[in-house]
Length: 173
Image (cartoon, rainbow, N blue to C red; front, side, top):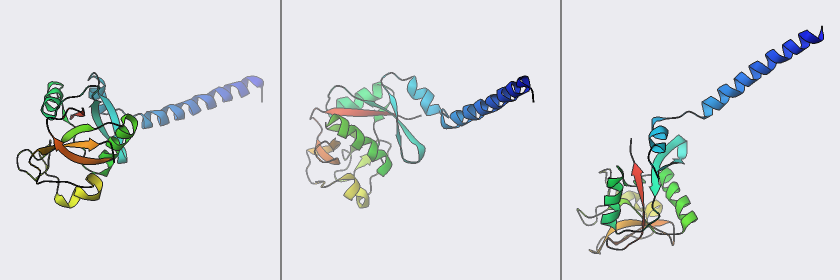
């Protein structure tokens, strides 16, 4: 076999190998609509959770009361973050571990005291309160109607809506 043939076969092999690497890289880097739209939203970023799920979130760098935080999210074309399920709650836990601060989320009992409603309109069933979401929840406290991620123990907590803390906005596409 001539050296020219060996070089030619080597180039063919490299070409096929590069093609396989490119195909594999493209498989892993599938870009979804949420990726594109989230990247076009200043201040928002993709957060991943279990089984390839994604949320487009903006973590505030300022503090507001619950009503003003909700209005700020709405002004951004978003809502306060809805973290239904253990996978999405892990996103909150990671953020809390990083920032170590209380964060308003999209959950409250403002309409009916004792009935927690996510800001997508779904009710958080009482059977789901413990142990994932709360250590304790006091529905009889008429002042504590808004829900925060409590930095002290990585659980949700009801508190007075006029308190001023950080918040998280979620874009839904």
